[in-house]
Every structure is written in structure tokens, then in C-alpha cells.
Amino acid sequence: MNEVPGGYSGKILRINLSDKTTAAETRDEKFYRKYLGGSGIISYYLLKELQAGIDPLGPENKLIFALGPLTGTAIIGNGRNAVGAKSPMTGGIGLSQAGDYFGAELKHAGFDAIIVEGKAEAPVYISIQDEAVSIKDARHLWGLNTKETQEAIRLELADDKTRLALIGPGGENLVPYACIMHGLHSTAGRGGMGAVMGSKNLKAIAVRGHKRPEVADPEGVKAISKRLSDKQSDFWLYKILREFGTGGPELKAFELSGNLPVRNWRDGLFPGVENIHGGVMKETMSVGMDGCFACPMRCKKKLKFEEPYSHDPAYGGPEYETISSLGSNCGIDDVKAVVKGNELCNAYSLDTISTGCTIAFAMECFEKGLLSLEDTDGMELRFGNGEAMLKCIELIARKEGFGKLLAEGSARLAKRIGKGAEEFAVHVKGLEPGQHDPRFSHSRGIGYMVNPHGADHCMNASDEQFKTEGAMAVLKPLGFYEPVPPEDQGPRKVAVFKVEYLRQVLTDCLLVCRLATLDLDYMTIADITGKVTGWNTTEMELMRTAERIVTMTRLFNIREGFTADDDKLPKRFYQPKTDGALVDGGLDPEEMERAKKYFYVLMGWDEKGVPLSEKVEELYIDA
Ligand code: SF4
Image 1 (spheres, protein in one colour):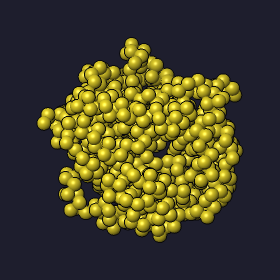
Image 2 (cartoon, rainbow, N blue to C red):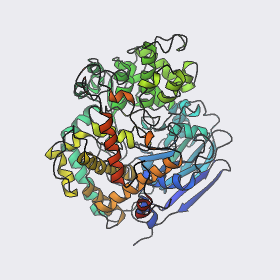
Image 3 (cartoon, rainbow, N blue to C red):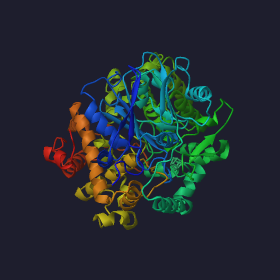
């Protein structure tokens, strides 16, 4: 067996911005097999190297970019990159991923991960040209938006193919939900990784590489990649994604089912959804589609318009989560305002989900009289006010006036406002949820509760995946034989949820795009991983790897003082919606609590959610 398995370079780049040192460390097969990549590598280093209680925005925090074994290979949708650090949003572990080309380029430069430590005295950017690494002055770039920054760095490096992970003013001003842009329209959005980057005075990482990773079985990898690509050309859902991107005309069905968040998750009906979905964008402002490394799907919208304000197609167009968070959840049905809001968030490096949800929460506070015109700098912050939403984004990025308050995010803003505002602040562990209502899919609620990094929709599952024989076919070889109805929240549901949840963890370690590989089952994951790395691996081994990683993230959070009480849904999800399909649909708190406790049991955690020492040992975790 080779010391460095296929798909990996075997090198981790460590950069200390305080003393301006860089070093490439080598890791062997044992390390990679145990932690796999992406979220796994990040969790390993954060658990091992961070002291409990550090300031997420202090120099002791570490910002880690990590790839998986498939990154940069010919397998479709493998340009992705994972980012992690202690999160300024939650105070626990922060994990986020992004598409585009950055991940593939970093692998081609010869690294599996970058660990950024310390803090630069003045703004810098990191240039990685194959294995040559340098720290460069970025004082002249500080304050620029992401497009200006990308253009300036490409000009300086005389290479317009350099790929960047970068921040705009939101990250520089330490907005706790600032994201890290990957190019101009893919984001590592969740948990404030952009603020951590800003706290280090790090404006960007620019990468260019020329070496394709070697894989153990090139012919086998080629065959799997072709199989996955062929699937892309046939499957109906892929046709929709190619045509409209995410958030196409199917949004009407989301509204009718109650899955779509409307007016701070309060309401169900939003006829205005007909004005803001991807079909409307396609008809009225599309100038083409864009994509990521090694993916023929090209599901990223490119939009352009000039009136009443201009929109730059370089920033792409909003995906589903953004259409909902800046649109329906703010009661806004003005498609241009939603598209412009997405552009501003990408230009300033703000997470569109937390930005939109915080504004939606503030709109409800305003309508309830908990915020006045004096508080909002004179803005009529009512649901449906697209201009106010755009102004809020400008203020948040600069932390100016009312923007200083909004920049806190829903949880802290609710505490500041008081007067009962916490009753309808929608977040878990301080992170606003992805835009899928758990009252529609109870499994999603379990995921929102137990996720280590807050209410994330990706490391999660949906009841839809378990409700029919057809949907369950992929779980049959794992011993799950019958569908589980959506209303069932008992042990069978939690068991299938756990299996699906762990599969999502694997995709965050391997860093395959969930959209490009929608139905990638455990067996195929094991097959691909084996052919790339050369390991004689199985779904059993990979499931244990995912379990190890989830347990490590749990240990990280427990060390930071998290308890089972932090695994709780906001009150709003226990109330019915005001109208529409879920008018009788609030979640049952006792049922959700039982499901959570059963998840703990299945994970080998005690009833307070603390991993049993036997479990930690059994999973070979060096905690
Ligand atoms: S499916 Fe879309 S998001 Fe995923 S890799 Fe392809 S182009 Fe990128």
C-alpha cells in the first residue's frame, strides 16, 4: 500500500500570519483513511489544536481550508472546498463548503488543506503558485468588494485564471455571518468563516496549480465519472437544474406544501412566489448559465439588467436559499430586488441566509412595534419592502447605523431588543436555518437540532427520502426495508435519518456536489472512494468514518460548553403557520425531544448528548 493514497497530495500547508512563516507538513495513509477529507480533516485539527474558550475572532482561532480525495479528479462536481474554524455565530465548530474552481486548483497546486494561523499586522493576501507560497501586501485591496479584489489580484499576478477564496467589506468589518466567496458566485456561506478570515487581516487566497492528482484506478474512475455524467443527461431533475438552476418554477409547489419560509417563517401562503422564481429570471434577465470545475450541468444563473438599478452578471444569480431568504421570508416579490440583494451579499461577502433571515426577523419586530423608525434610521422596515432590504444589506456590510444591530444576527439582535422578541427569533445555536421548513419535513427538524454548526439544511435529511418504496431502494442494502411515513417520528424514522445524515457528512468529507450527484448512494460512494484511493473500502467503513467525524464535532462543542439544551428548535416551529398547508402543522415538542434523545442513543451518546467514553474509544478518536 502506498504511503500517500490516490487522490491526495499528502501535504498540508500551514501558514502563520503573525510571524509570516509557511510550512508544508506531510500526512500518511493512516491519517487520510481515518479522517478522509473536507469536514473530517477540519474537525481533526480544530479538536486537536484549538484551546477551549478562545475568541473566534482572535488570533488563536485557526481557519482551515480542506479538500477531499476526489477533489480535482475527473469525477463530476469535484471543485469543492470545505472551510472551518470556531464559529463567531455559534461559538461552536463552524463548517461550510463552496463550489466553483478553488478546491480543484488547490489540489492541482499540490495541497490537501491549508491551515491559517495567527493574524497579520496589516491586510495581506496569500498567493499559492503550485508549491510556491507567498504572503503579499493587501493594504490597497482592503475595502474593495469581491469583484474589484479578484480583478486586482489577477492583474497583479498577471494570471486571469488564478482562482480565489476572498472576502469583501462584510468579512473585513467582522460581520459574524460574513462568508468566504469562492470566485464571485459560490460561497462558503454558513457560520461566519468570512469574519474569521477578516479577523486575520486576510483578504484573499489566490491559487494556481498544474498537477492533476493521481488516482489508484484511472480507468475505473473514468468509467464511474461517465456513468454519473450519463445520469445527468437523462434525469428530469437535472434538466430543470440546467434550465433554471435551483429555485425554478417548482417553488410554487414549495409554497403550497408549506416548505417555503414566508415572512419570518410565520405564514404559509405567498402568491408572489410566482414573480421571483428561477423561471421568471430565465425569461426576463438571463444571459446564460455558469458552472463549476468538471461539471457539465452548469446550474449557476447569470443575470443582467439595468433598471431601476444595474445588476452585474459576474455575481451570478440567487439560488433557492437566497430567493427564499431575501424574497419570500422578507415578504418580497420584486425579483429585481431579490437578485440585487444576492449581488450585494456576494460583493460584500455576506451569507444570504443569515442576512435575509435577520432582516425578516427585524421586519417582524418593526411591524410588532418592537423597533421604531428611530431604531431603523427612518426605514419603514415592513415585510415586502425591497428597497429597505437592499439598504439593510449596505448598512450591515459597513456596520453603519441600524446595520450595526442587524449585523449581530437574529439571536443576539433578539436579546438586544428584548420585549419578547426572542419568542420569534428563528435560529438554532445562533445560526439561522436553511430555507426548508421542518414543519413540512420533521426529519429536517431533527437535523436542525443536532447539527454541530447550527440549523444547516445540507448536513440533514428530508422525510421525502423515506416515504416511498422507490425512495427507500438505496437504503435496502443497508437493512432498511420499508418506507417510513412523514408523520412517523419514532425509532425507524430516526434510524433512517441517521443513516442519511451520515451520508451527507461523507459528501462534506469527499466534497462531491450534492446537486451534481443527487442520488449517490453508500455503495457508489464506497466504489468511487476505493477506485480513487486504492483502498479496499466498504460502506461500513465509510459510515464509521462519518460517525467518527460527527462525534468529534460533538466533542468540540461540548468542550466549548454546549449541552443538550442547545439542541433545540426555535419556538416558531412548534406553532402552526398562519395560513396554507401547515395551518395545523406546528411540530410536537415532546415528539421532537424523543426523536433527539433516540438519535443520541443511536450515536452512542448519553442522554445529555455527551459521547460515551466507550464510543469515543471504539471510533478510534484521539480526544
Ligand atoms: S451541479 Fe451546479 S453547483 Fe454542482 S458542481 Fe455542477 S454547476 Fe456546480
